[in-house]
Image 1 (tube, rainbow, N blue to C red):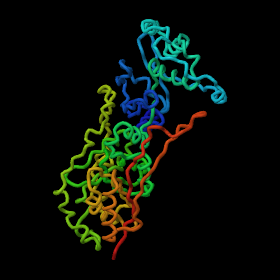
Image 2 (image 1 turned 180 degrees about the vertical axis):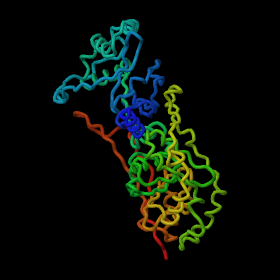
Image 3 (image 1 turned 30 degrees about the vertical axis):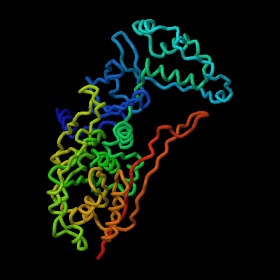
Image 4 (image 1 turned 120 degrees about the horizontal axis):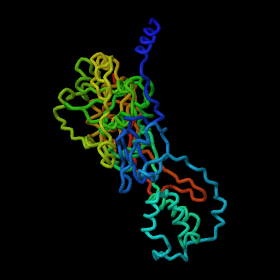
Length: 447
């Protein structure tokens, strides 16, 4: 009897462990890569979640419990089509034969008569349960021109048919880089055209490290907030500040699958609450005029209120929905964007923040910087991102005139992505040549 009591006590004291971040669990957000980047979809996994590929709906239940990076392929069974996990097959390197291949496509005439298989025969194979790979092999065997094509053309032909008859799905983990790349590829305006190299530059120049207290003005849907919280890893704080009565939306934070420990470190507070007359810096009398009534002059209109990508919502269940986070016993609201406590705000008033990141695509950089820069501690770094150069140049000039910062510089990040394949390595043809500009500096005292 006593043994059972001890076991009961041990079971009550045992706390549930956080799910393994390397595996896709039920209820977590995932990034689905359909056909090698042809379509990027954010989804919330559940037993009833479905995704539309082509003209058919597929259940996402097979993805639950699979490790991130798993590859799935559409297969046909007795109950219809479904997603099945496959292991990539290592192909032999045939790069030695690429340059020696003497075939070319000059004599091939595209008259739609090269394929002997008809559409009715292909549909009959599907009804009989033929897999996508079997259909592709049948198309190759019945093609009159496949053997005459150049080797690279044969690979492109196989890839084209694979996307049509055997689409593949890559299960990716949403984190700062993958989320930024997905939005930049499909909806760059929603994140202020913030490219992944510019995002990494913001984190580096702001010196975001463990146990840092980072002040963030995030008007790009929460991408910067999530990236900072991801790097902090549950230490320090990331505080979203704003002008006016309502904070800026940070819906993207929900895609990161943060634990309660990390979410508790994401707080929000207005500029008026963080600043006060008796804690204003001595040299900032001229620069800080109008801080108290700044919120009355701003009427924020954020275009990121509908930040969830339309393509995400293939169905209501497959789309990104609100994350329900259980309340913590220590902090009242264990969710991103909880109100900062009075004790924490008082600490920041006395000591200041360790760094500042501003990503306000719809605001003038100087109008925001002059209000939030005094909230930093002395010798603290700050970075300001903007899509255009001129607003940052104006902000830099006014910072120099007010002697508010040193080591001011404007950086234009540049990223070039290469395709590296046998005998065909070259930069991507449709790469982006623009990633915005970053103004960085260090706050100083002029007394």
